[in-house]
Length: 233
Image 1 (tube, one colour):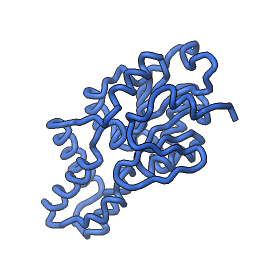
Image 2: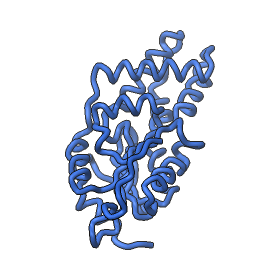
Image 3: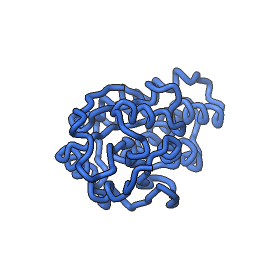
C-alpha cells in the first residue's frame, strides 16, 4: 500500500457527510477487463488449451489467485499458479504498454475530485507492478493512497482492501463512496460498509440498499457522490 494522506482539515467539504472516494481500477477507470481476458486466452493457447467464453464471467473482477486457479483447474493445464501469475502479469503489462484507454468520464471525475481536495484511493485486485504501470497514465497525483491485491491478506471479494484504504485515509468506511464495475468488487465494498456506485463492465449488477447502479462514469460527479451519503450512521 502506498499513501500520501491529506491534512485533516482537507478531508471533507463543510456540510458534507462524504469523507473519501475509493475507486476500483480495471474496468472502472481504465478499459482493461477485456485485456485480461485476451491475455488469459493467449497464455492458455500457448499452453495448448482453449478457454470457453462462458468462463469470462467467472474470472472477471477477482484476484489473480482465484481466476488463475480456476483456469488451471478448468483446463487441466500443466502449470503452477505462481508460474501462470508471472505469465499473465507479463502479458498484461505488455498489452497496456501498447494501449491504455480510460473509461468515459474517468479523467473528468479524477480531475474534479483532485480540484476539490477529496481524499481519493485506488483499490485494485491487480498486483502492485500493474497498478504502478497504470498510474503513469491515470496520474499518481490523483490518489492519496493506493492498495494492490498482493498487499492485503485477503483481496476482493473480502472487505480487507477497502477497510485498509479507509484506515489509511483515517476515514469511516460508512462515509466512503466506492466506485466498482464487478459483483466481486461490489461485494468487497459492501462488506466493508461503504456505499457503492456500480458501473457494470462485463456482467449486470442490480441496485440494492446502499448500492446505486449507473450506466457510465459520465453520470458520476462530486455532487452525485455527496448526495449518496446524506447522514452518518
